Length: 243
Image 1: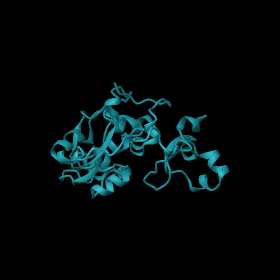
Image 2 (image 1 turned 180 degrees about the horizontal axis):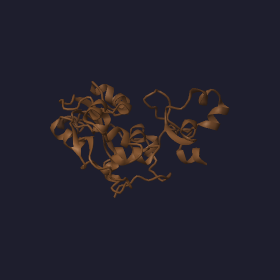
Image 3 (image 1 turned 135 degrees about the vertical axis):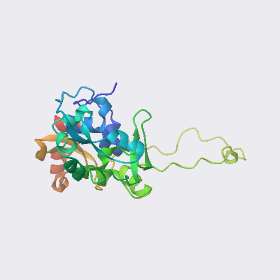
């Protein structure tokens, strides 16, 4: 069962791997529920009666996003951080927020995360979740080319599988490998993935959000001005930042 949790018990690769960091770490519960609806079956939201809302469930299937009227919208739309962009008094207000209203959706390259397989890829078409169309998300999630998508999300292109005849060497090795390697690394490598802004991803205090600790590469430049600032503001994990 998947749930949106607020703690520091998430897997290490959620903050070491850029694509998982952007996909599974959020500053609020509402944001987590928005992008992972099945993890928030009980949102505590209050029914708001008949409203206009984007019919995101059918849009992915038929390639057309419509604003519809009724009360069959997901309960998570009533959450405080989501209601203003998902429930409307008029069709005009809904279509203003979602300009593709009533029109065939544009095809884009977009990131796809398989949490079970721990893999990521970029796909093309109109099958992207509709929250990616929102202004705050479109620039980082919808792309005109596969390369732009892979670069932004750190997706490594899949190497072509070698032909069957090349999988087994035609000539046996000339000799046994040496018993031990000739060189020993002096220390373990440190992983420092970079985010879409080109900076190293760190955990850091975000004073604009009530001193919450975030994990991305959007930290202020002066955090890295000198060693003293780096030690004070930048951390390798959210847990260390929150200590």
